[in-house]
Image 1: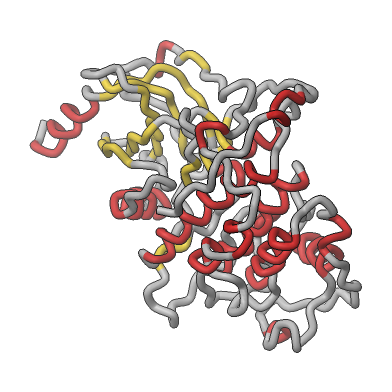
Image 2: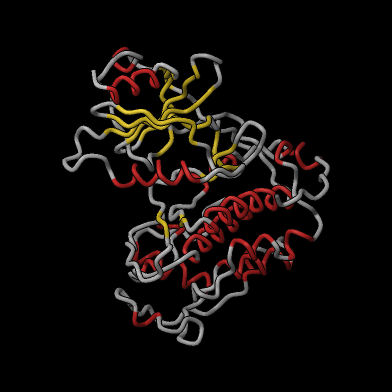
Length: 364
């Protein structure tokens, strides 16, 4: 055993896998413990043995960016260790995600709750953008929730730095329902606006309790966007007809957001509209979003510890014998793996309506 293998072996012994909690194409997520303290952690195991060219680029990026990013609203990377066939990321354990909370119909969302989740999302994203990192896969499923209610941006497998404005980037990023129209039209040069469109879709989903723009294909996604927001003109979005995959869909009329989001405040509608501007250069930034009047108007954001929680946390599955500690042949995973489904209560305990609204939280 060489020096590197010995170091990895010693590091691996610091952490113990207990149960599988999520799985994707190339990655599996386990719930585990720190051997010395018993602290709960998550281990994301990325299989590299079957990749012809070695370690997947998304895994390299995820490790790199999580090593750089240290913020209360970004998931924390605690450790990394590897073997000949696997790369293991040790992450803080977060018991649920925003998608599970949205889908849990026993929860009732107050306007102050939505404001709190939006503030934490924008805080974490502003920090990423300030450090020249695009997330490129923001969605409720990738916004994890800690036991104390703190929201943490996770899954940086599609993240990318954007220090060079002349650098071509792929348009095949961001889950379709949260993907902005410029990427659907094949744009290869883009910036922080792509993440802010996703934030707008998440904001809408929090208010509607269902995905806002659920297209069935890339072309249908564009139609879905245009039906909701109207067909863009050259005045709205200069140059969009010159994008590589531009296709005309005819004219859909623009409908006021107030018709669908009838309970939303004027400030909420204004922030939503600024996130969903067609021209990505005119979309609001995460920094400006944090200082939007929406966050300074009553009701003020709910303290994270008092936010609604999923009635049933993500259910772990016990490990089969061949995946227990000490075995070499462990199944592999994709960085953007889907989570194991959870059972949720069917309908509405309305006691949460009576929760008082805490004082405004500071944006630190």
